Image 1 (cartoon, rainbow, N blue to C red):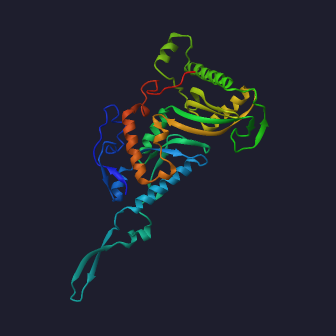
Image 2 (spheres, rainbow, N blue to C red):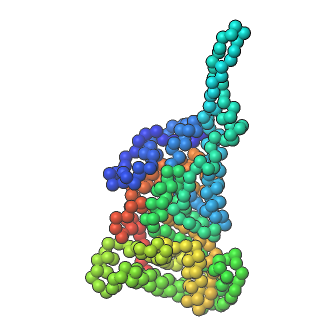
Amino acid sequence: MPYVNNLGSKITTQGREIFAVINEKLTYEMALKLVKDAPTVWNYLNGLVNLYKPAGITVQQVRNAIIHNLCRDLNQLEVRPALQRVVIDNTVDSKLIVRKVEDLSDNVLVTGPRYQPDDIKCRFSANHGRFTSGVIVLGINNGTNLAFKLQQNRPLRVYRVTGFLGKATETHFAESRVMARATIDHIGSEKIGRLLASIQASHQRKMFELSGIDIQSQAAYELACRGTIRPADNRQPMIYGIRLAEYRKPFFTIEIHAINETEAYLGELIHEIGINLKSCAHCTGVRCIRHGHFLLEDSLLKKDWNLQNILSSMAHTNKLINHHPDMLQQNSSSLHGMDVPDQ
């Protein structure tokens, strides 16, 4: 049976309006109570969930799997009984007897299970592609508002992207047709490191250009002191940090700190890295290891996508948002608590 919490939580004054849609009873400090009543559990099913999305499936398939598992587990609990209707019967001595009987039109055999997929609302805070795996945050019911705020606030995401040197494909990913081949004997880890440092420097210059500020001016210095600069256009990909994490020829893995990125953009980036190395390359894997303060080790694997684990994840997420309200409402250009590697 699922465990739900039954004590109140403490929300700071700054985050009170942001967390109005969160059930204040979902925190780690709460006592746990075994509940078998489905309507009670349903009242707690509001918030954000940190999931691990496997590669090879779409976010829509993840959504359908979550909704199916929630409906299945809720319907296995004690659902509400069928409605009653009033029946008036005649007796032999002409007396009327008024009694209540079960309304068969509300029986589960007629209407179907009490909890249907259309009853559950879901929204993702990021739109990962089919080849991308890793952290993805899902808002359920009232948590869809939080997922929208998280998406609009554009927290930093961290990826581990693996490329294959020597082959170029049509879509820049491994599952498409090979279009070109090239030698890779001249490529070493030092050469890749220098190229990645150059890419990071060019993106840092681009941040100031999008802000309309001369990079050599005092205004640029003051803006840089405030923290990481965010582009106003959420369609503009921006890399804040990029480094070589592993190199096993012909495979190489880079760690990317970015916002506004897409799966297609990361594939194109690997393709451009191969060209700049006087060779060619394609992407073999993309994994998101962090989304804001949502970490990979806290995400739910596919085998754990059930009602009890989702409620526990909501409790952990509620505590995380209480500690980091800037994930939903950014008051400055800085990303609090984010360490971008220096090159």
